[in-house]
Image (cartoon, rainbow, N blue to C red; front, side, top):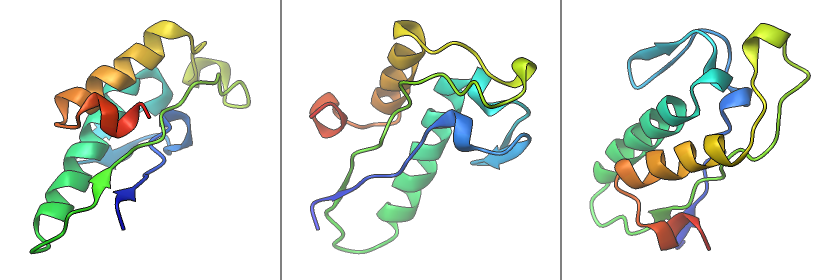
Length: 100
């Protein structure tokens, strides 16, 4: 296996979800934090497996989750997508790992 592709869409996390020991009261409003902490946790789990070589290639959210309550979502545009890309990069992924 070459890649694991976690679906890190912030809108799919539950209100109050705890990710990497950090609570997210309204996950869709914090795309950077949700993606960053999800990928840090995934990387730490993978690192525990000796000889494991698969890379993470996360799915990133590029849509507005308008089915959520108005106060729980935001309009997704370039800014929110860029926040998720930065989060993946800051979590140690190389751009070609998640932008292919």
